[in-house]
Length: 444
Image (cartoon, rainbow, N blue to C red; front, side, top):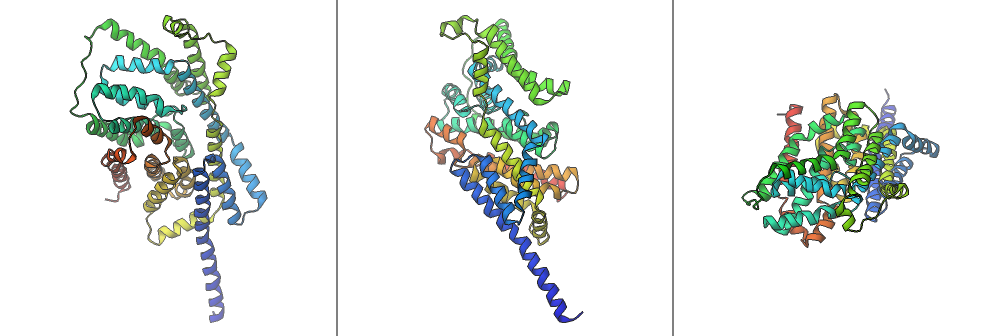
């Protein structure tokens, strides 16, 4: 082959290689736009959609292709079902809160556990299971009161409220929006997702107890009487029934999750109408009687359009990314050049979540790029764990994290004092996730 021809071929290959690598810079540029828009309080769904369009344009995709991809993403049965589930979860949480069912469930917990130390850990977890507006503030007064009984400092109260609020909701509670998005987009069953994070969850539960509550004496309790304990058990079972009934119906009867959640909403309203509304304590407080129209308005107020938009934005971003063939090729080339895929996951996952105060951006960016590279289902699950855990860590310590902002304001604690409580538990939890990954990959 003539030197001129070889040179021409080499130039063409080099130019094509540069074009492929440029797509990664374009993706980063679009992501910066998403983060900036999110920081300006633009809904994450809108920001992700704008970012997806920018990536598509910079990748040379035609407007018609973009329109078809966006429509296909938001109109797919998967996206519609996911949106319905999120809507039903937010309605259920709102209705349980407003109809005093959630508060009575909390009282039942303390009566059953008969331990102030356990209750202060369980309450934030229960409150964090649903996307209730101001959820962090709902548990703050309860944690504050229990903290008074235990004589623990305000920074520890704030740390307990935040850590235990997120452990169950993010990792093992199947009603949580983050859990649903992460498991369903990865096409992993709820059971597999829970088992994946069970060791990390157990570690954080035990470590939190040791760090925050070890050596603290339990306040003296009233003498145990079976009649009062039985009443607490009945109240806990009754007022938590909308949650476990919804879950059991979906699992046992194989009905769509959004349908079983709708049954949970109706059950909550029935509990209120026939029990709480007729109770003397409700009448004494001057509680109003509810009719059908009142329940309908209450349910309507529980819908969070911003969260639905965020789900659709994720689907759009995912669809566009999956349609750009150069992205996985470039990441594969980077890894072929010696950059470990684990480094890509941890660095990008943490930074995106930290900057945007959301795990959703990390999921939307890395799932469609990284998961197709897995050779087996087992490796895919390990990638899911590492992506989700990296995103969680960035999101959790982000100064834009709304739960943290609200909790710090309530307890009048500076962020520095709060972060000092994390210096062991968070790095250790991430190290455990990395250890699980390394061992299961057979890297040691």
